[in-house]
Image 1 (tube, rainbow, N blue to C red):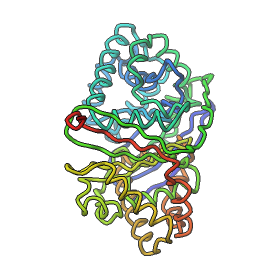
Image 2: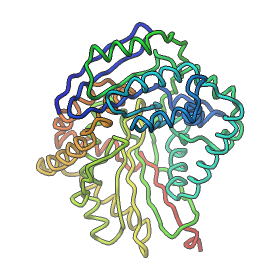
Image 3: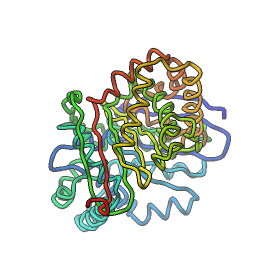
Amino acid sequence: MSSEFRQEKLANGLLVNLKEIHSAPIISHWVWYRVGSRNEVPGKTGVSHWVEHMQFKGTPRYPGGVLDRAISREGGFWNAFTFLDWTTFFETLPANKIELALDLEADRMQHSTYLLEEVESERTVVISEREGNENEPLFKLDEAMQEAAFKQHPYRNEIIGSIADLHDLQRDDLYAHYRAHYCPNNAVLAIAGDFDGDEMMAMIHKYYGPIPSGQVETHFPEPEAPLSQEERCEVKGPGDTTYLLLAYRAPKADSEDFFTISVLDSLLTGPSSLNMFGGGGISNKTSRLYRALVEKELAIGVYGGLQATIDPHLYSINVTVRPGRKPEQVLKKVDEEIKRLQDKLIPQSEIDRAVKQARALFAYGSENITNQGFWLGYPEMFAHYDWFTSYVERLNQVTPQKLQEAMQRYLAPERRVVGIYLPEEEQA
């Protein structure tokens, strides 16, 4: 896939990343805002996610229903996502229709209306989404685990927000959050696909250039102290499945240790995709915990989770406990495998296989135009674009010594939260 990368910053502070890819007449257009649940304060959790919803309610020029019909009519698709550190909106369209995306995103960067009746209608939607999540065992367990792992950092809160805050937030809270963060000097525009760079920059200047810079509201959370002793939380609820979740404080994404933990994740549980679109379907059957838990009939499944974030977040190991087995049995086996890796250097051949799997999943998650647009903006939210281009090289720099040291430092028993979800049938 031939490509040419170009970066430019407009006078109003908008960072523009372009990649020409002439393999198909398609363009993917992304606007990334440096705001997510990390930027929220107590009493206003969930405001970033709700604001993302409100951005689809329209502007005077592009009322809500018009936006969706316009994208569909031109043969495109669009969506948006809110995460810990960012919110993003994208459109993927035929190349000759891309001006529509430029126009509508520049328009809603400035002119979203936030009508009171739309806010109240969306309140019902967001609360229903939250209540639906509460019926999911892993959501309930994740929420309890985050609150145990972080005492004051906003990473302790669910992105969707607390039910109390969703009832209390008002139209002016949402609009103020929008005005404080949705401005060009707090955004990255990432466009990948079949275009001429000079022509695209001319259109970008036309649509985004006149937007004035904003007074970005910054919020820098206090660093969270390291976990100093193991904490436990137990959640009970509906269902018939027991889950075990281990959460260790992980390094931030722009540190060398992040890549070491990425290889560790591949080795322990199988590679995890950082791309929200996933891809590849890499099997985890060669991973150590699959062999120790699933093949030994202690668990039905096991997977890991590592997020690229501004501040240290969590590395998690998620286990679906096999019926008839106890979570303490599973935990004992997990600890045995981790201790084995901490006490003895891992063979280079095993590291090479884990790196190869992680590289393959990374490649699968980077292969189409929409994914290329994603990767143009995503690393700018916690590092820079060269984080993406150097990803594979930095995985290859992980050595047995680095891996063992990371295992000892990050996966110590006193530096974790152990969570167990027990179905109500087992409460007796």
